[in-house]
Length: 295
Image (cartoon, rainbow, N blue to C red; front, side):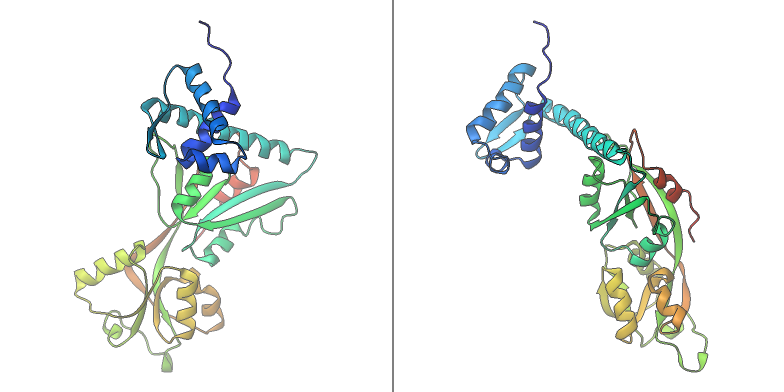
């Protein structure tokens, strides 16, 4: 029997249920009866000639072919989103929309520095989102974001051909209130008795600093552990503690003398990455951002 044209509405219903893993919730979201939604998916299964779901109690699990169909559906609906964006950008307008995701712990100053070349451009509309790396990658995969900024790299895998490039590598410093008499800071001797403000254990900066302390036998007094760089900046400014941060995080406070850079910590760096994915049409301003020189 000749293969008939694919019913994309059936495929869309399957895609929604596969993502949610629950028929009832999707039926409610789409204002359909559960039986009507189930029938639509069953018609897709009949057309393909294979089951796409295994039913386990109230939950649904994808069959082997279901995973294959889901991969195709991801690509199909991602291309649909891209098509809408391309058409919307070309409706006789010169404006471009640049949708940027940044992990919640990333320095706000770094984000601003990275985006500065396009800030203020009348033809560019910036959309900025924050979240976990997994959340943002999920949105990037279906072209709801154009780029994700992260301080952790990702690797391409069988499901996604991520394009991850390092856009900056910055040394990490110890910063705090200005020292009396402008006396030089001796690392690590002068750490004794200082209240340290450190990034949380999920941070690569913290991992490298811990390795340095272990290798050199450095004992430290930890005052606070903070994942959010914006909060670390505030504590450095207001608590009297000494923060372990890239200088970019406190660039404004250093400039006006509210904080002082005591020293650059050897062997500890923060890397910044830009993550994109394969697309037929990339926003023109994106390449300009990715090729700029950052400290």
